[in-house]
Length: 170
Image (cartoon, rainbow, N blue to C red; front, side, top):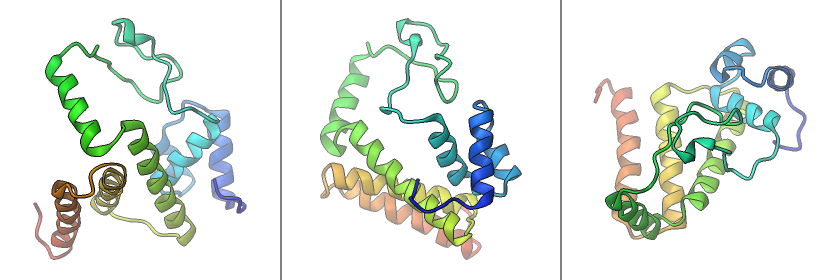
């Protein structure tokens, strides 16, 4: 969170997350008239500091996450050679997943904070495109900046929104 004082609606939503840890983010956003990304940020702040790792007992073969998990998660043991090869090639192209996630989430939080501060809301396709672009930027910054696919994808997400604004739905 920024050092700035939160707006009253944000303070109330934050307190609500503290009092009701299992609250659905979309419901809290609607109730307090906040953007969904900003509500996620408030929820994460209310949960407290995290090293970014979930404590999952399911790794042993069960599919039930620990009560600390944000959402229901089904885990698969990494015993598939092709999957491990794919993960290895992705790490070489894009950098470590944890580094990517940290930068992508920081970019998305910054966008959500600024949008909230400016009182801006976006259509779902606009916000999704902005978030996907942030993910692609993170991959470029952490990995191979000469990978044309990331640049191509950024252009594609922007084009999808621009086309929809022109009345072309893809």
